[in-house]
Image 1: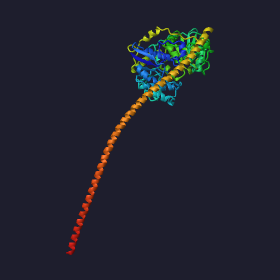
Image 2: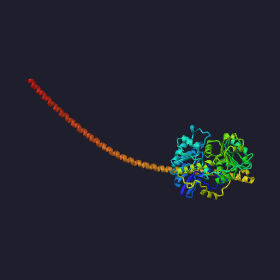
Image 3: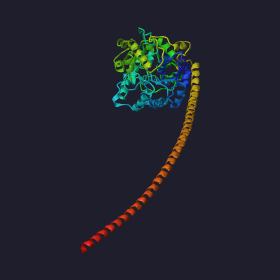
Image 4: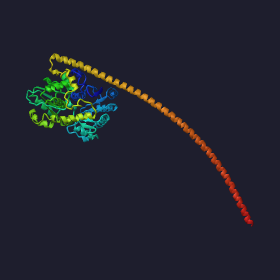
Length: 514
């Protein structure tokens, strides 16, 4: 059986109550992360595959354990190319470099302004470059969320359709190749889901707040973990510079008990299916209604949402466009609520080809139009908890019980974090000790090798010195012989010269006499 590890805080079959999430974040601070992770699980979940969650850990020291226990590591990411994710991205880069198994990134994007100045670069350019290079050593291609991210990677020196390709967000492919969005007949009695974040524009918040004055059957769907704490325990307040955003339980949304926060995707899907209309500035707050067929409109204000809204043809307006629209009825007259249906098949086929290019086994191998999945029956057999009621909706007795539970959970969470920190430090120490012992062994082996090499060199040097000394002795002997021969030659030369001189003298004497 193939063993697959997926970057996620929980598996789709895990059951976590509000209390569980309050105790330990399993969403990565934003429960919208659950949406695209769920899609990856559903697509890869076969009878002959065992899939686990990595707990959202990017610890490079876990590489050895991952290598031993898994055959594949799948890393779905959101807008991970951003400044406050740099250290985590560095950790993943180091972890991936140490892994010996395939690593496939099924989606990643750039966080930037609506009109990003790519040519100016970002503080995290080097971190992104190193990350992409590390992933490409373990897989064929990286999947990016949209064309803006694709242009960014091209600017960093990577090749589109070779090193990476645009695949959108996997959450749009959760239930397959087809989208079917219901018709909308919006009335003041229609049920509405509104969504926003603490960084949404003033215009978006004002529009939503004005809309619920006439559409009373609404629910606010926050996604940040600190907003869940606010809903569940009444505080602490959250921070936002946006006027009218719900930062405390004194806000209208909380006072009227109209807030829901989901701890599982099945419960979120069920809620979205039974809502008539969804609207707001959260990406997955409107993607989830899209894939279950609920009409929706997104407010696009940054590059992250812009590239995804463009690629998936999500029904949307920009903040500049929204500023000139008076109410929701005028807004509906300007958009096509079913636009996403028209590109879904094309995008889905491209996504499946991306999975095939990276060698991933998935449920659509034999039939791209498949609608059911092995995970579906498992999920249907589980009774997932729906959203907890906001604390403001409880009666006095239950409110006190909630406060007591939250207080105890806060203490337990503090203890949990302390234990986690201690265990993490102890693990790091054990890894350091293990590494130190291994390094000592390797160093000792190197010393022994060097000693052997030194002895061999010393032996060769002694032999060389001996040969050199023999050569020196031979040279000395040769020099002595040469000197002797020179002396002999010199004496012979002198005698010969004297003889010649004597002969010449004798001849001269004779000549003189004559």
